[in-house]
Length: 255
Image (tube, rainbow, N blue to C red):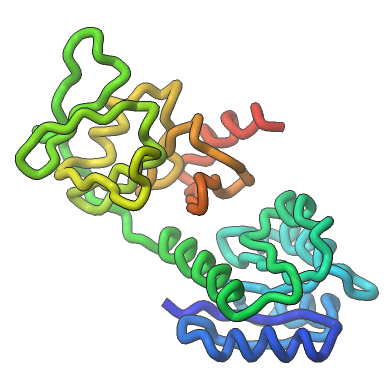
C-alpha cells in the first residue's frame, strides 16, 4: 500500500528535510510541498491526500487551525491523517484534540519519522481490510464452566488454554482465526481457530467492546481515545463507522 503525502512548513530547511524523508520511504509518495498552511489548504481542494506532515507554528494560518478546518469540512481521520512536526512540545495536547496520528518533535531523525509513517500505513491497512465473511459460532470456543466468568478457554493448537479476561489487551480477527494480545506477553499473541463474532458473544460487554470489524478491545486497557481511534500501549486501533454509535457512548465518559 502506497500513501500519498504532502509536507507543509514555512522553514525551507525543515520542509526540504521532511520531503527528503518522504521520498526515501518506499510506501510514501510525495505529491505536494507547501511553505504555508494557506497554500496547502488550496492544494487539498484538488487532490486526495492520505497523510499531511504539518508544521504547527506558521504565519496567517497555523497547522492546528488547518487541522480544524479539515475536520469541519469532513477531511477527517477516514480520509486524511495528520502527523505534526514542530519544535515545541507544548502543542502535544492540542494535537491530540484534533485527532493527529503522531507528533514529531524537531529536530527528529529518519528513524523517528519512519516510525510515525509506519503507524500511518498500519492504520490505512486496517481501514482497507476486507470484511470477513460471517461465521457460525466455532466449536473451538469452549463454554466456561459455572463460576468461571473471569476466564476464557480457547483451543490453541492441541490444548485448551485458559485466558484471564483482565490479561487481554485486544483481539484481532483474521478470517477464520483470532489473535489474542495479552498484557502478560504482548509480543506473543495467541492464535486460535475461531471467529471474532463468536468471541464477541462470549466476552462480557461491560469489559470488552467491538470497535472495528477486525478488533475487540478491553476497555480497561485503553490508554487514550479520539473520536476515531483508541490507543492501547503503542498500538493505534481505528473505530469503523459500523461501531461508532456504541463507541461514542463510551467516549462520552472520558469527556
